[in-house]
Length: 205
Image (tube, rainbow, N blue to C red; front, side, top):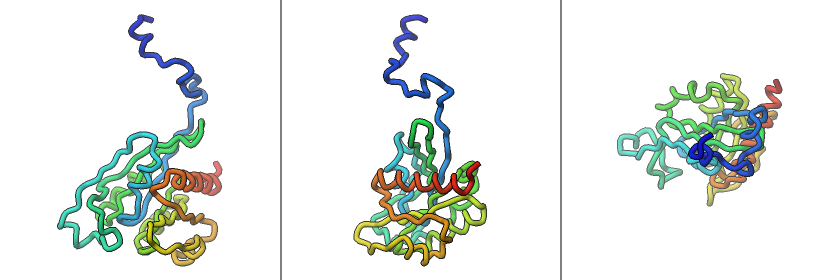
């Protein structure tokens, strides 16, 4: 090996175990984050991603005023028009690729492609407008993909217990409902771990 090539090698102490032994390579798993417009999907992915997240944000214009309800999020100036993407290593043997779906109805046609190959989904909910997450709940119920409900608690809004949200959404008892903060990395990680556990329970093989 010439000196130029050797200089490109990373010292062993900086390598992860699976980089030194390919038989220890982590399992790469895909999960989806869905929900209504402005519920916090982009924030969720950004808070947890260990890489610079891919975002397809576009500036909102007057053309969307008739279809995008900003009453609960008056300061929102951009919107996801394709998807968000991030990655997080939860353990030496598990890497999650996190895909966020666009929330507006006019972009729902992309969901089938985004969801393909995922082990499960997190449906983000805002208690000020719970009805916005019904389309996502219906979608995952119809396609049989395991999912959990994560209530994104916005600052200054009333707090609710998970069981109150479950009753309001008529979510089945076996589906986890958690309260979280999409801005907080630890809170997001807990939600992702909850989804992985639920997905393994639903599809153990």
